[in-house]
Image (tube, rainbow, N blue to C red):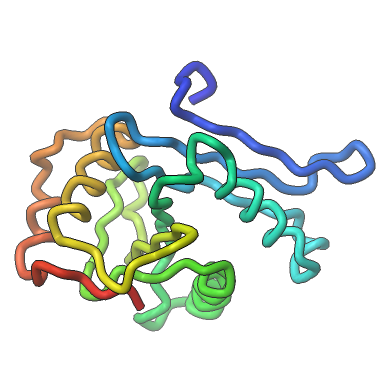
Length: 171
């Protein structure tokens, strides 16, 4: 990641210690990017630091005019992590992110563990009420190809798009 210019690394320091960070990718030839990692020191959560980091990240020049995608573990199905997932999604909603309705996002498998059910959220300083299916298709392909080194014709992409309406509401 460090050697790829489309990646952005931002860290938050407090008294000389790293207390939070964000890693993003600005997709090549696209109007979107992906928030890959976002972390705040556990003891400092709930104090507004995450909001400060997120706001700085979304104003960063390579990201500011793009849609920023966020893969987040779904809170729709019962799981041991359901409360944590709901809290995380609520944080993103407070920051201005919205979920792409009807999209059953499938994160590619990157290790032996099968990824949990995921949702895809999106941020932009001025989000529309809906997104065209064709834009979501482009974003999914960008993500699969540029982040996960998969094919733009990967079967999960087709399956995710199969029964979606032409305009997807942001909720």
